[in-house]
Amino acid sequence: MSLTRRQVSTAALAAVPLAVAASGPAVAATSSRGARRTLFIAGDSTAAQKYADAAPETGWGMALPFFLRRDLQIANHAVNGRSSKSFVDEGRLDVILGAIRPGDLLLVQFGHNDSKTADPVRYTEPWTTYQDYLRQYVDGARARGARPVLATSVERRRFDADGNAVTSHGDYPAAMRALGAQEGVALLDIEVLSLALWQKLGVEETKKYFNWTETEQDNTHFNPPGAIAVARLVAGELLRRRVLAPRDVRRLGDEIPESWITWPEA
Image 1: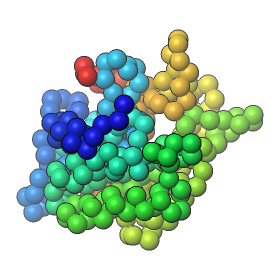
Image 2 (image 1 turned 90 degrees about the vertical axis):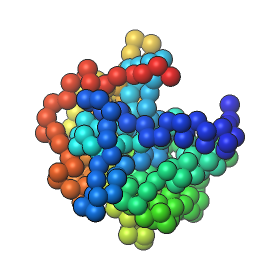
Image 3 (image 1 turned 30 degrees about the vertical axis):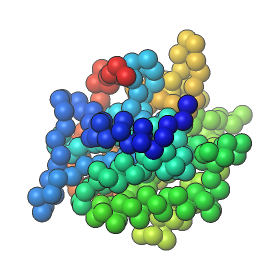
């Protein structure tokens, strides 16, 4: 079922800001100038908030607050099945741009669904329309005094016959890297980092990080350990790329209990 822009705007604004934290609701952080700060996430199902009917499936955006200071608010607008194009066409970027403020951050991760060549609603071509849509996020954030941040798509659990972790996103990560360089946008290379992590863990151990259950063998979406592991990569890159200061990040070397992940009712 597709939604109108009005329906999307009404539903999304009712949920802004959506914050999932380890200890109570998050409060907006303040910059050195005293401005409130929120990190907005625009993305797909790998980052999205999941609800009770989807458990144990977990988006990495659900675990990101565990690695950020408690008063840095997160507004997770990532939605299952969206591409850089469909997210815009449904008015979801408009909702973010209506709420974002100077000093805020807009973290953008798309690519999983942009490659759906048989679906004109979602498909984009890596070196043309994909980059064109990503520029809308970048330009929209900058026009409002916010900082855009690009993140290449987290990799799927995919191995070759020799047990080597292999890529699955074609040219989309390279196209995002090129756009980031052209536009001077900080880029978190989560594709490379996640691929290295899956390689380190190996064929069998990675099953513990993806949504493998008695009834499903899902090599794209995460369970709590996987979401926590990817969120740790994202937070580490936000620090390494100096998007966030050391005081904004916590627990990068700590074990995070799976019990901290919760799935609210839809």
